[in-house]
Length: 411
Length: 80
Image 1 (cartoon, each protein chain N blue to C red):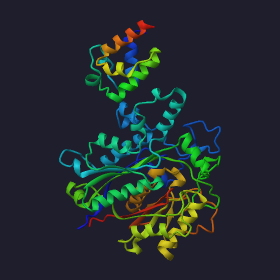
Image 2 (image 1 turned 30 degrees about the vertical axis):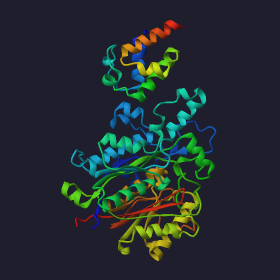
Image 3 (image 1 turned 90 degrees about the vertical axis):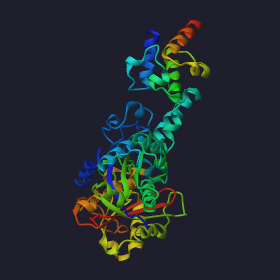
Image 4 (image 1 turned 90 degrees about the horizontal axis):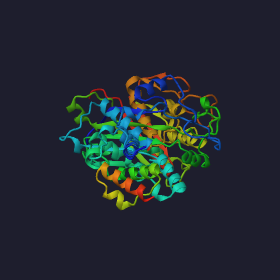
């Protein structure tokens, strides 16, 4: 028999706050976390704005030695992971440590540390490159550090699927717990890629907004959208079997009731024009769900021309006429694109939505695009009781990953 | 700046959080100061930079205590 899987803890470090609660409050208030880039000099860049995490202090979560030799993406994950474990009242000891896994997705891994050391190599030669270059840079340095920091001895996996990585990490944890390979996992996503090389790379790919006005640059589904805004941060959940959560007597935040993942097999950056493959991911995630219960979609909603049209079509293809009755919003309008953390934050948003009965808005929505004709919860949060919420994430490489979250009603 | 202070500064830079009072000549780098093989390479680079000299891999590997580093740096500066 397959286990049911629930969420018992959430943690987040985002451009809107250093906890889930602070982030959520700002989302509901429609606050923008986007500003001029302060992390490097943008003089030669067409792109000037991003959604930076503000006032993050690693000392609150780890010792100075760990912080010094952990890339920012790892530091964010350690912080969000410890918040989630605290939220879930998780205590890890000899008798349960092998039943717990750590599965965290990232898009660009330790790109900041890598860039720094490439500069050292160029300026001063190989003998000056840090001995910690590889352990700070490789994508799994994050789960390695999390496992050490938390004493987790079960499976340790870093999942790499671009902007869908956080969703896939939670999806992988869901499947492993469902099939009783694990009782529990620290799962989510993290990225810290507001760095010259990654901003330049996304700029050259034509993906980023060149807007000079931070307050309204990110406008998902609006006719005047012109690219995504680079964000950063981490979103981590404690995912566990219903049985384990009941045994521990902890409060259950929500149930994960489906995960669907497909690959476009089409183009390395563009979504497949016919949209049926991404729609299939939604259908798979909703395979065990009564369609009438679907009340909200946390959109990938990047604010690029192509994503937002494509995602609108995907939702319509998967849900038919029902799509017009389901509110869809993009919190990226406020937090920017947190890359590997984006889908994990979307999942936390879905957990909040089913519990609080409030939908976060898509801010900066002014000019309707006839090709984006769904209900995007424009500008103002909305009260609505939701039973099932869906979190979409898509990524370069053709990733389409979707999670379905159900309100837990004690049964 | 004397050699001991130079070493203290280098250790505090590469291993932040180290208790400075433990950085004494008889302190064992691995056992007392938790400087592992990776941190040892960082320490060697920091010392090379601050003392403007170069340390070979063998020299770095042979060092056990803070006192050994003091002796090594003093012998190196004597060479120049």
